[in-house]
Length: 292
Image (cartoon, rainbow, N blue to C red; front, side, top):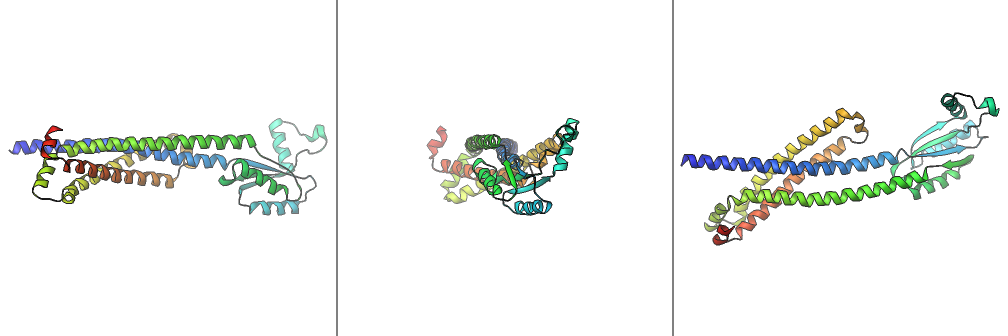
């Protein structure tokens, strides 16, 4: 008798371990999808916020007018960062790059003073940047405003395509994950289907019968989620060691959201799957239980 109980306990323990490992692997995949979606969003914002609008000033502009223009541009909602490049600085950079002074063959400094404006993300699209250009041209002593229109259009088109692909991938993987976890939980409940039927025969309510299965499933889900978070954290740390600049795109906020999402997935999906699996066996008669 003791040997049979020991064997049954070992089998039950092995089922728990197998179920935990299966759910952990699925949650790791879900975590990777969440992490990828957040990273793609941040990468999109990073690329957009590094798009530059160049404001070329008129040759006869004074220092006071330059300061006035800078102060006006600085408070605009589309300005994330403004860099002023004077005529002298532009000439110096050209001379260092080309190895010759343009004044030697032109006779004067041909470079105008410019402002380079890095846009905030909401304004880094084709329609908004055109409105930004028109607003800047209303300012006095502005010769022209240049921006990479083709690059902005291409970036926004690629971002839209990537976002759609990631959304479809996230939905498909969520459905697949739910199916895999559901099958794993159903197998663990299947081995105790006759216990469920016996409890039903002695008058136990469905809620009373479901409660320990739900607690067990949620506990396994939490444990699997914690293991998945550790694995994902280890993977991110390895990525950081290889590419430290990844911190410019990914911060603690994204890591926290990913961890919370994995934990919630682990709890919610296992609870729902256990609820559905137990209800399935509660509806069956003794004859049906023997046939499956």
